[in-house]
Length: 183
Image 1 (tube, rainbow, N blue to C red):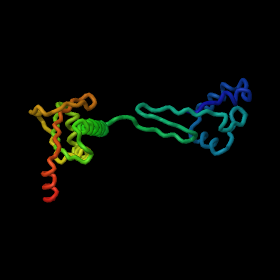
Image 2: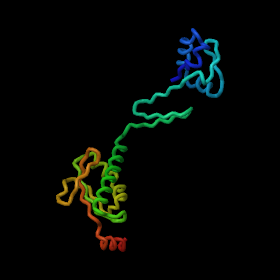
Image 3: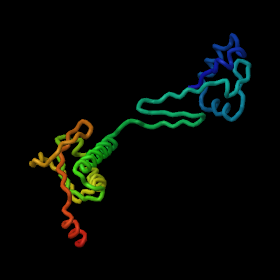
Image 4: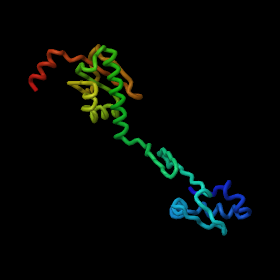
């Protein structure tokens, strides 16, 4: 939105300021670009330059805007299903890493991982991002169950507002060595 700079134009325009402000407010990109290129434009018989206008940028709904000088960047902040699923997967990884730490596992320890949630959206995210989750938490085996885990060794963690039941076992090093030999 282009507006008149009342500080620089007020004295020069005098009584014509209201008309000048209205005229300037109707300008589009061509007039703005001309001023930015160093040209002057006439309004009510007075030459004006880029210092005589103020450009206000307004974010559209679901956008975050940052402007500096002539450069503006707008980010679409609307979350779609794919972004929500990725966010749930990242939060799941974070919670699983915390569990690994609580269990005293090293960064190199491989694990078996059993997961269950009653949340459809979290279950879908786990399925979509199973490979990434497995890689990040060093899970040699990752099973996402459709029914509750029947074991006393499970733990529950919160992934956003969803509850995730987790059974995490360190991979037997003898088994890991045999697996490497087969592969």
